[in-house]
Length: 88
Image (cartoon, rainbow, N blue to C red; front, side, top):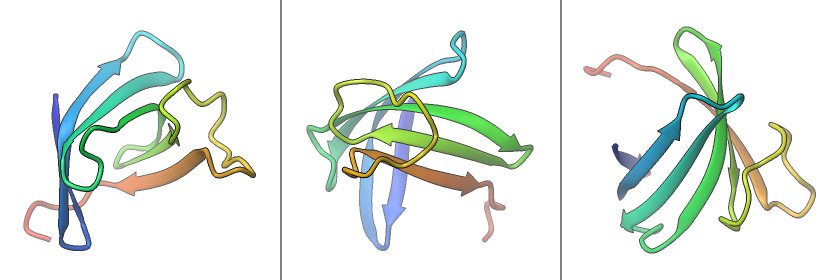
């Protein structure tokens, strides 16, 4: 899968592999263009609602996060995303 994110006008894109057979769901994200080019992130995700997901990222790219709580050393970043309409 391919991802594209607009980070305040700075486009970031790459590939993403999702393993739906794990609990929580695991993602491996490889940045290819933009500010995260050449970086790898390991992440876990959970569905919070029909139109909302929460993702915990390991910013070091070395292990999957063990929880959805941020860590004191900022190596575990947690974000919630809500689906929006395409015309928004």
